[in-house]
Image (cartoon, rainbow, N blue to C red):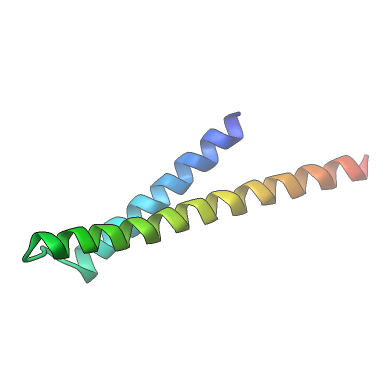
Length: 73
C-alpha cells in the first residue's frame, strides 16, 4: 500500500509539471472559453497519460527487483 501511494504521488507530480508546462508555454492565456477548455483538455490528457505511465513503470521496476531478490535466495 505504501508503494502504491509513493508511485501515485510521484506520477501526480509529474502530471502537474507537464500540465503546467503545456499551459504556460504552449497555450498561454487563452482568448476565449473554447480555447481555454481545449488547452485544459489537451494538457489534462497528456499529463494524465504521463502520470499513469510513470507510475506503472515505477511499479514494474519495483516488482521486477522483488522477483530477482526472491529468485536469488
